[in-house]
Amino acid sequence: MGPRPWCKYHGRGRVVMQSNYVMIFLASLLQTALWLAVLQVDPFALSSAADRASEEIFLRLYPVMYPGVWRDRVQVVILDENSLPLPPPPGGPEGSKEWPLRYDEYVSVISKVLEYEPKGVFVDIIFDTDEKRDPTPLLDFIKTLPISGAPVVFAAYRDHSKKLLLPATMPYSDAPALRGLVEIVAEPNHYQLGSGAGGGAASAAAVLYNATVDQDSRLDLNVNSEFLVAWGNTLHTEDANHPDCAPVIDNADSRWSEFTGAVMSGLAGVVDSNAMSGEKSWERRQPCPYHTETAAHQLMSNASDELKQRFKDSYVIIGAAISGTGDTVNSPVHGQLPGAFLHAMALDNLLTFQGRPLVEDSSAWYLQAALIFLCAFGGGLVFADRTAPQTRFEAAFNLGLRLLVWFVFALILAALLLAYLVYLGVAPYNWGGVLAVATAVLFAGAGKDLLTLVRGVNY
Image 1 (tube, rainbow, N blue to C red):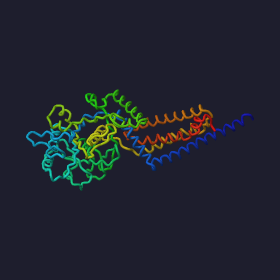
Image 2: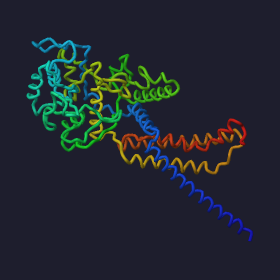
Image 3: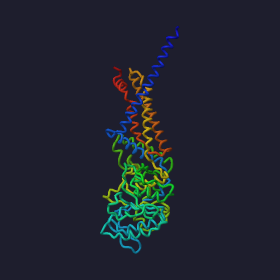
């Protein structure tokens, strides 16, 4: 008779424990649903702000992983208004002393680039109709482009009703002269591929990519799509010695040293907002561009074996640095750069990832739901039945335990983010928002611990 009451009590204990597990499970499901609704509806724009911050942090730290395979095969030529006039071709007229240039001068620059046998060229300059300048040299030049030569992509607006000299009537595919949109209708740090309008309405980098790869490898540009532009920060060994550049070269030690410096710079910015801006700061860790920049003035000055070696079989982006045009990009790694560098980096992404750059994926929502549930259920198992602390020591222990659980969750989050990125090639989801939710869930019941820690006794 003696053991029976104990067995009955033991049985009730198991039932109660199982009931607690069920209640924690159901409560965790409810918390997950509520937090997902908050992230989705985003009533106070907190989720979208966390999403942008997550991307910016990722883009400033990801260069340690970005492969530099195509860095030297994508070149940028810049027409700088401060370096005018350009040296004229032999026997040619004197160059323009101010912007815009004559059309024959553009022809001279493009022709000079084509002499070096590049893989493809993008001219990131809008050619508007202008009665004061004769467009004949440029129009005649386009007619002479051989179909078997390097494709030349000219910048175009999305709205064809605008008065453009070029390239309103240009063919889109399998032709020497192509058109590529330069109006990027996408979120910051993103680059649009197709506009969804059909008929070849696609961004310049995508057009140039499609024109130089096998037909089976081409992107579908008839759908509205975009991707997250990952920036690199490594330089040539000789460029790394330049006093204005961060000395980051393509080896593991240099990359990880810069990664550590970026993390420390970011943490310093949390404490001191002045540390977040300025030269070689968190917002501009690598002041020098990722892709080699050649001044148009240097290009036109004389032929050199160095330029021949640099441009041959490379992609060349011809852009301009003109004050007041607004054609700039705010790189998360380099700060303000001429807009041509965005197209260069987008093309580099397409080439590096073989047409499969970092895109958003709907499965991220399932992953976020799983992570929030894991946090809520795990936190419930650990903290649901803990008694209120009676001393400062117990309070500190409870808070330390919550911090430990949060840290383990953050490691799991980082591991999943890395796996998602490396193995699936998917852009990082809103991990900042998920981490904020985890913090709220794990520390929601820490009020008694904090009061006891301050007062020294629990009331």
